[in-house]
Image (cartoon, rainbow, N blue to C red; front, side, top):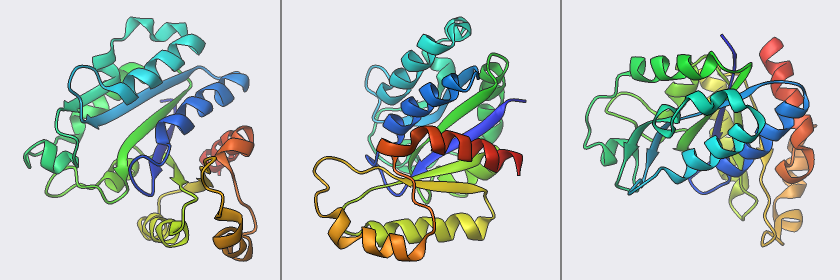
Length: 217
């Protein structure tokens, strides 16, 4: 079985796909064949845009993935842009469906980046939340958080959920050009609370190595 990295975030539109694409390049530079998987994508009217972006980037670096199709990369595609529970009308989702799809991808790579949908507590069905996917896949998790006002609360809540679930993880900040107040309003607390801070825009290679170290530990 290949190494598994689960990408989640403090909410939707935080930068999971952007981060995943950068990690594909970072792991490739480390000499690894990288695969990608997006178990669930909602808001799909024609093609799953996030899954397509991941697949196209991965194909550049790992041509072996050409034997797969986009439907292999994104198992559950739902048209309504909402939580999977809502978009799938509350229907039960069998996790075995994801395992069989993931096995096809893992046969072609050394490490697979699995991108979640929304945040950790997004409901998939009446019993399963997105955080349960990370645990089910036995994956090391990368939590991506934003740099807007409120990021302290959002980050700490997500970290608490991961710690209580005993899921191995690291976390990183995805700061954007418009986050001009971050260093004044939020960074002082993060510097006080945490010995190490990772920034997606500055430390992606270090993040990749830290994820591998977390897998090995």
